[in-house]
Image (cartoon, rainbow, N blue to C red):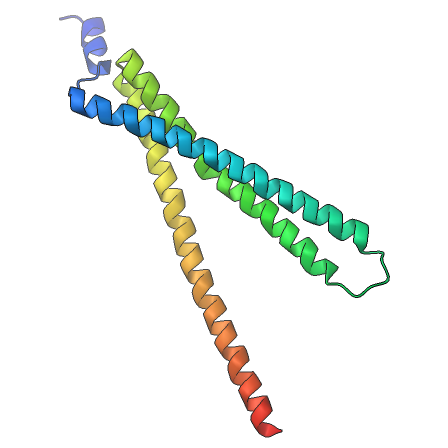
Length: 156
């Protein structure tokens, strides 16, 4: 066997029909969820931009309204939308590369797809850790504020 034949053998993919079926179904569902995620990101970005526009248009009105809070919420929506774009892209890429690997029968393409899925789960794990830490921080800040409020009320 010459080098070219050996390289070609190393690139061919050998999976059972059951595994191939599962990969096809998984690729289809991840593509569906990626598209839903892109729609969700677009909605978040649109809401964020609309909140910024409303806050800027109404900030000159002579009424007392928390326009800075509306701007902050608008920025939060935009940042969250941008952050959630990353897992949507990774899911879509997993779907695309996995489907292509099954069509081409190419293990290198499947490896790229699997790497995208790994990236998705790493990203989601980091987001989960940040969310848990943020939740504990909010709980601690709320408890501290409540204790301070109770102390203030008891001193009256």
